[in-house]
Length: 460
Ligand code: ADP
Image 1 (tube, rainbow, N blue to C red):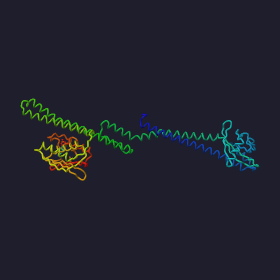
Image 2: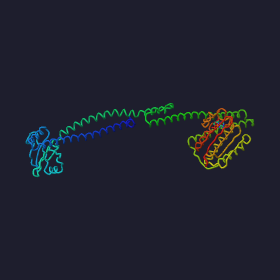
Image 3: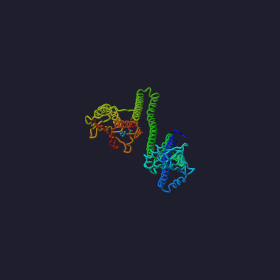
Image 4: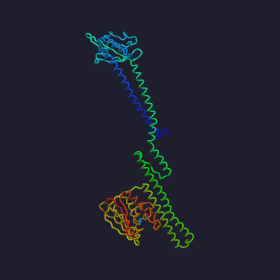
């Protein structure tokens, strides 16, 4: 048995608890028994004393004393308070001698003076037998009291007590023996759900993500099972994502790498001597290298976000100014191919990370350029609940049932239509930035008409 195990410890605790309870009840019971036996002894002595005293002065007096003696257990004596013996059992029976115990005069008087008409004292004879003496005043002769003393030794009382203790000990032993078994059963029952959860957790550790954790035992165990079930789900998702990511990353990297290799070989074998062809091929190599590098960078950025390594550097700035500056730069490069429409309210102040917000605008405007019809509209407007940023394009859009998926890493509505360095990472980064800022955001799309990405910043 594992001494550090919950099973053993719990078993030991239950057992100790039972033993302590039995022990305490035993002591209380013993005290009670002792008390009862003592009380009975005193009551008997008193009853005998009373029956003798009620016969005092009558003819039946000595007969009553004798009958008490014949009872076999009592010794009787009457004496004056000065210690002069008047009647003594020694005079009546050879067997029932008054024991070798003496109450001296002072003690006797003291007991009489402080008693309510009768008293009890305990005395020991030279053989160390304990005697309980009952005393009561029989008569008063001109100021001298005559006292009746009835005594009995405690041997029979002790014997009785011993018998009762043996019975008590026997009962205690039976209870403790039963406790050995009952505690074992209780512990086993108590730990059953924990053992079951452990067994299933071992399956999980071995990679079985189909495992579920049982409920219905204790509230705490149900909570644990619920948390573990969620963890299993997380593990399963994580594992699935990991596989997807490896598949996507290798796929996305293989395409530009194949192109780079193919065009390098073409330069080596075909176009090396033809400057025009060679430059065309070199352009392809350079653009594919850029794609690869962009992809790796985006993936690294996303990993940093997901590992919670990115911290925001918030400042207060005008969102409309950021958009204006960004679009002006873009217009200079793409003046001929795209039309940029701006609808900007003035001084739309927000408290956010400038660089990250610019990254959001960059990602969404790039998508609008990639997937739209050449017109890109950016709106920044002040609303009653904050500053709203919208990036709108008028391209083929995103089907309704795919809208919730586009924020997922490496998700592409049409993964084979690769013409602009797509990687399915951009919107995942946008989502991470928006979540980190704690703002509301969303997308609405009417395929073939317009697609609108929106963000709602609190006004600073
Ligand atoms: P990427 O554009 O590099 O593929 P994103 O994460 O930016 O990666 O976008 C994920 C997918 O969402 C895209 O592949 C595309 O299918 C879809 N998408 C994003 N923006 C738009 C848009 N404005 N119009 C249509 N589809 C879009």
